[in-house]
Length: 134
Image 1: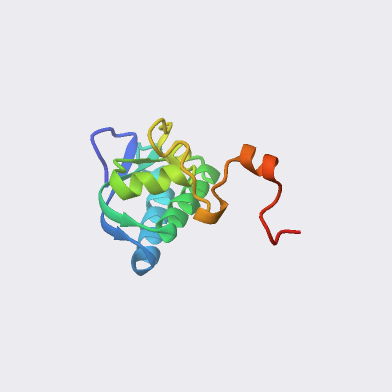
Image 2 (image 1 turned 60 degrees about the vertical axis):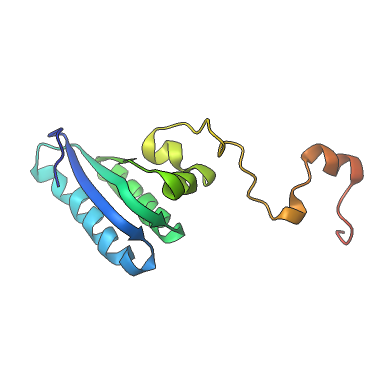
């Protein structure tokens, strides 16, 4: 569980993070957070470099663990997110919180609204509400 830095307890995750592995990952991170006081480590680092898929369940596990770590006085960060996992963190606004990165790429201004709602704010002000809205 330890990486090269003795102050970091590294939890390396691989494969898919979804509902099927939710409890196992949550328990692993919970154990890492609460066992850290018995070591020289001061932070838990979750390495996602080998994760191929993560849905909102995985995001919730990371956020819950982050909150738990902070409440216990333990540092918590995520490293190695790439592809779909990186995009999920970026479009949900969690990239900075969990990784410390700022999103300056294509995801920074990602429009997550349904296609019918993608009119610009200026266009909405000019034309008023869409037909059918009261």
